[in-house]
Length: 359
Ligand SMILES: Cc1ncc(COP(=O)(O)O)c(C=O)c1O
Image 1 (cartoon, rainbow, N blue to C red):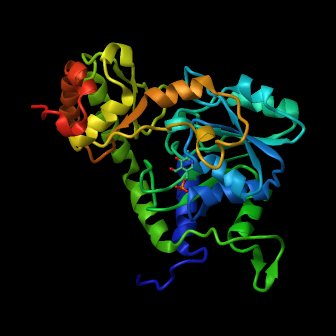
Image 2: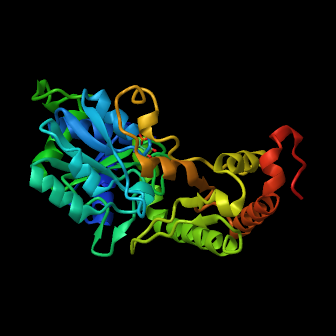
């Protein structure tokens, strides 16, 4: 506030870009107003055309950003073991109209990058990543942010590292970074001079200030989130049919408690479980239900069924997690889940209004 400089590539945006590039050990970081517009300006800067292959098991912003650019998102199934885009199914979808593969590192678990890279190289197309969930995740020698032609982070308030609202594009490509900086500022390269079509995708200084404070606190915040996931894993060990998906990459932000529900052993459907939790003020979410290929504006377009996506979308739920959650609170959620599963037979029959309180 005291500086009087609120936007337009201010000193705090520059400082945060350098801070993020240093943290991720990547050559360039270009901050934007949000992750969706970052995906849009990246596809514009790469001059993508025709079709872009995307997973359906993602947030709808991934295909929407492509569609908004006049591109056709082509939905690809996931690998049921990782829930990330399946490179083999991806290759089968490539046509002469395909200009890129857009992988998503779902919940910060890295895609099969080497196999996607070789598919993209074999067909001479771009490989980019929606790394919305992936800040602080990856391998010891290369964090997410260093893969493909470029990667896009969402810095929305719900993310492990955030600016309230914001986005970041990371790349090792000097020319691409320069184009992105021009595009995010209406195409300006100097006063009164534009070189290309641009838009307003700038991050304001206030968001960057929040980001700088959060970046400083990130290590502590990740270690608190890690404790939350470990508590869930321990607390759910004795609850049949509910499992926390492990964080397999060597580096992780532990931001999402991704649970999978097996209705056969728990006795309750995922949807009913979410309802019962909500009635107890525990806000679990069905991610990413029902799969983007079944959402407007995509559900009318011809798309083969995506069996692994549909299976995952019917049994995944995200439990409340993150650095603000105390281990005691996690224990009480686990206890509640245990009670629900023990009473599954009654709860599956009763509607919310007629259900007795779980003591
Ligand atoms: C996978 C994925 N992609 C893109 C986005 C869009 O990011 P933003 O909300 O910053 O526009 C999100 C947001 O949650 C997301 O989860």
